[in-house]
Image (tube, rainbow, N blue to C red):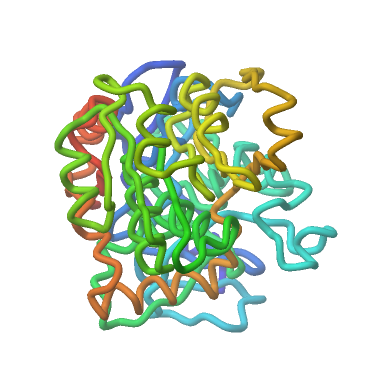
Length: 375
């Protein structure tokens, strides 16, 4: 396909400066090359990572088109694409190099070039695919997609085909937030039947972990948060106990529910004080997974002897250790069976209300905002 002939005008949400609102703009997107696919985006999830990049917790170059939980329909493919075709329904996941030691061993979430592939602000060749209305390049390829847009370019390796029977506009969050929470429980921590689990933070990631822990057969599932409505929903989704950390000491409350502590835990708030308490509340041989993103350089502390003498483990987790082409279809099937009702986390907004969606997410009013793209 002639890439220049396929270039098109699109609508995008742009971050132009640190901590500034998104602006809705017209832009120009080139067509797909090599292993790329052009996707007409139906809807994109708004993730905490989009907001911390907007605020420059991570040094992504601006101005940029963010968005990394896209779902849509393929409209064109590059000449090297072999397994996808026009008309396929896809969920867009994260980018990987595909050939480093980690990628080659099935651990693409820990790709040696993960930061460059997902936060570099350009394609692997250093070029940009999007220009603004003045012909100036916009930093893009965010998570190999930049899907706060009516159309996005992804690569075959991060475009995951899903069944047409599934509600496509709902599925975007499976590409990051939902697979992170569920995957951390199933793939990373390997929570087992009869075990004791705590989710620190009952946002979209934490509640996905709660649902996954229920699927895994955990006997005790504790959700910790400060928002009563989130804790109520956590109970409905599978939590056996909830803790409002504004009203109770986390460590004391966890140990009162689960004497000796919990076997597994997931920290998704990005708050150092919560992480430190989560480590303390682990049982012997317990493992805590860390998925909450903080500013670069953030340090946490723990009692070395508590870690050593108890055989406890602190484990960083990226994207739920998932292989998206395997895990995302599994989550879709569980959803269609009614066993993984992540739709209960979602609230839809039109793209032009992205700043309201961001505000509602930051305030805890909305668990998982999903932006519908204009027709």
